[in-house]
Image 1 (cartoon, helix red, strand yellow):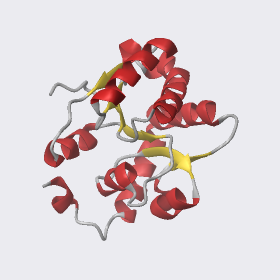
Image 2 (image 1 turned 90 degrees about the horizontal axis):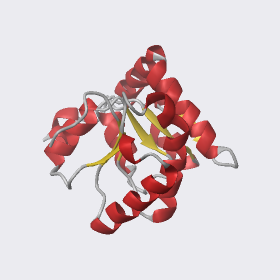
Image 3 (image 1 turned 45 degrees about the vertical axis):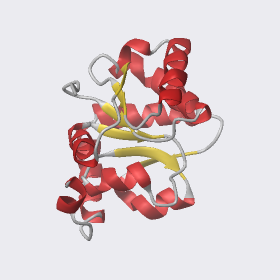
Length: 173
């Protein structure tokens, strides 16, 4: 598996609605960061891959989007550790899913603000409220985390504090 040197990670739903939202966000940010920080997607089914391919072309971002094969947990943890940021513009699953994994590995997170996400991440993520401007606001939040290193560092530190009770070594195994 070959990863770009720097990248934004998405590991979430592969339903068309959420992939469409993801690419709306990405199309807003990709012009500024897409060449240096491509969007890497993990965990997509074959149907999700086909949907993504069509949508990436529709949104004009195909060249800045890469899909990983399905990975075992150890390799997926290594992908998380290398990402510049986790982008999660959807509600969390009941178990916290990708956002909890990113926090456990002290990665910056840009996510949709919900009661559940606020409870899971606290101050350890850049949360964006749902609404008409969600794609633009999430794209702007992503740009902020990528471009302003102090913001990313602050989120990483908050994630590390937030997850001190979690055992990072156990997740990475």
